[in-house]
Image (cartoon, rainbow, N blue to C red; front, side):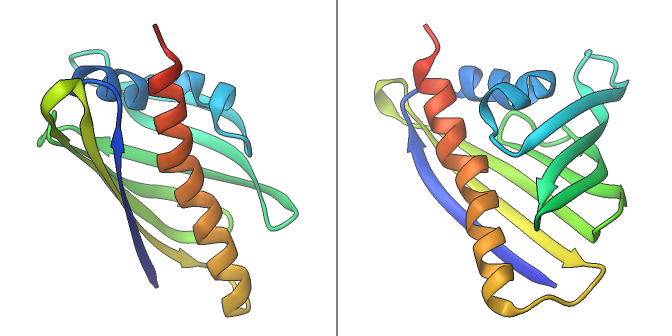
Amino acid sequence: MERTAERMVIGGTLARCIEVVTDVERYPEWVADLKEVHVLNRDDEGRPSVVAFRAGAFGRSTSYVLAYDYSNAPAEISWIQKEGDLTNRLDGRYRFAPLPEGATEVVYELAVELRVPIPNFVKRRAEGHILHAAVRDLKARVESLP
C-alpha cells in the first residue's frame, strides 16, 4: 500500500473550500481525468455520503465507490473505498485549517492499494497526478470562483 500527502495554501475561506470539495457532481468540470460522478446516497444534511466515480487511469477507465465521513467536519472530510475495479483501497482525507486573510491551509492524504502490481515509476507518476488534481486543481477551482 502506498501513502502520500500534499499540503497547500488556498486563497479561499474554509467555507468555500468545503463547498467545492462537497460539490462532487461538479468534479468533472475541474478534475481532468474524472469522467462521471454519481451520488448514490446523501447524509441528513444533504452532503454526498456514497459516491460512484469513473475516471481515466493507466490508459483505461476505472470505476470506484467512495463512502464519505463528515464526523470531523469542517476540519476534516475523509473517505474510504467501498468498491473498486483497479484498486483494493483508495482511502483519504482533506484536512482544513483557516488562515488569516481568508485563506485556508489544505492537506490532502491518500492511501492507495492497487489490485495488480505495476512498476514503481508508474505508481509515482499516478500518485503525482492524483495529488495534482486533488490539491492544485482544487486551489485553482476555489480561487477562480467569485
